[in-house]
Amino acid sequence: MSFREILEHSLKLARRGEESEAIRLLEGALSEAIRQSDATWIKQLARNAAIMSDNIGNLGDAERYYRVVAQSDHDSPVVHFALDSYTAGWGNSELSTAEYSECWRLATNLNDEETLELLRSAGFTPD
Image: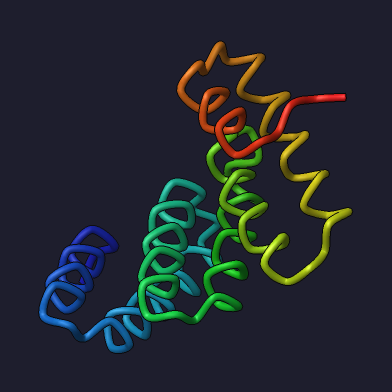
């Protein structure tokens, strides 16, 4: 099965309420994408695994998957915003502030007003 087919199948499983099976499928494909150094699919597979993990309340795995995404997509303000949500939830305010700051920096550099507004609404403004 191609990465695209695996992703599509995992989404069908998730829609049927079989998120754990979908995540297992994504995890296997993610391991292969990492082995192949396929950054595009690493980001896609890990992002979907993170969202599904979050949906079933497995926040530790969601954070782990977002960290995988961040390694391949370190210039995405949205990834840093998601990571902040998890680090704040674990009570790590220093790391949370660092993720918010990086998110703000990237969003500013990209003129991403939507993400900047999201940060403002969450109560974050740079020092």
